[in-house]
Length: 260
Picture (cartoon, rainbow, N blue to C red):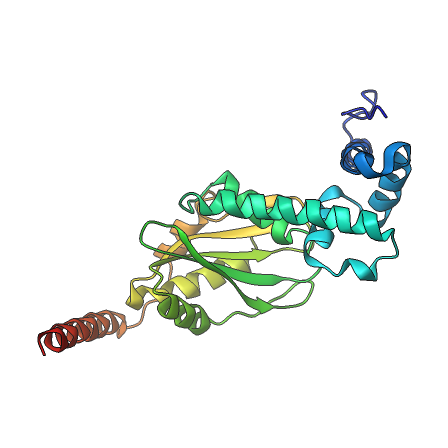
């Protein structure tokens, strides 16, 4: 069966025509994926799937993370799509793990976009990094509603200390589809930066994931603004000194124990 790679070239560029072009591309891509097991029926089944999931991204997200038994669909096809979707997710994850997690990293953006760009509720995650910016662990810190999620800085710090992380990337999604950060997002970033400062825990970036893409507070210059405006207290310098002193005590204790 021949499946064209691109949709109708006569479609224009207004929002409705762009959506139609994207739908055609999604149908064609899914049809190509299912052609080895469905043959000529792959195009009609692909159209049914796109009608149900709206896009290939949402389809992949569902089959990679959900129980396919809940979908009233051919069992063999469901299993096949699950294997394809999970393989794709694994490939993106491995690509991200092969190098440092840096602001603007395409591999990181694709991994996050695929892993929860289609979620219906806000989810706050933190990528915990080592001194070379390599990923130690990707933790879901909180799950909220369609437009809000509550996160406490002390939970972020607790997990960072448990994992011996020296840097973190804050991540959350916007189910609305708009990846632009809100004032509340910037304020939250500012508060977390201030809380992490006494522990020398570096904030690499705050990424916002949505169907419209991934935005980076670092790339938008908002992370630097948040760092400059992070609230400080008279005790902050004292806190840093206390943490440094405590670390020195632990090192001295370890040296003494090694000599025993």
